[in-house]
Length: 163
Image 1: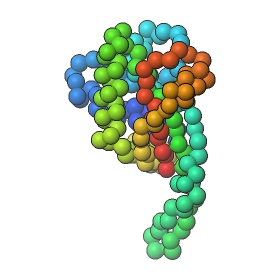
Image 2: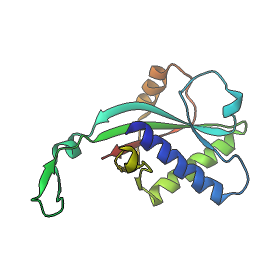
Image 3: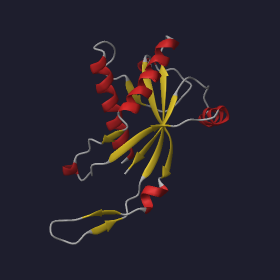
Image 4: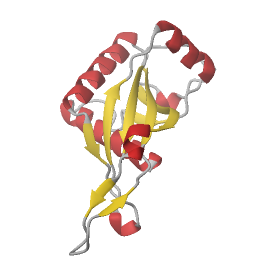
């Protein structure tokens, strides 16, 4: 569920930003581990890093009701997750990275809800997820970067609620 959600989200972002501008890399967003070392293959891209997984207590405790054919309504307790995902631009031009963060914020404000592109024929269920910006205080931001063991840089943290 986690990998499918992140890959689906990255696919949506790459499609949107590629259609917005016919210039630049076809894969602007890449799933990567946050690291201090500079990877030449990731230059001028935005790294997407999973920094935390939590159970979404509200959604997990509320049953999902559904009806199958003519059978009575069933209740299914699904485990819902909150994924904290960090978007880290790695551009030679600092201003370009800030512009992409701004466009990313705007994109998620206009498009907060997504469906994953998983294939039900492969036994995977279709998941819906919601993306929202996560504000951190200066101290929380410092603690996040310290726990990752890397130097602080411009980035945006989003919470993804997966059902």
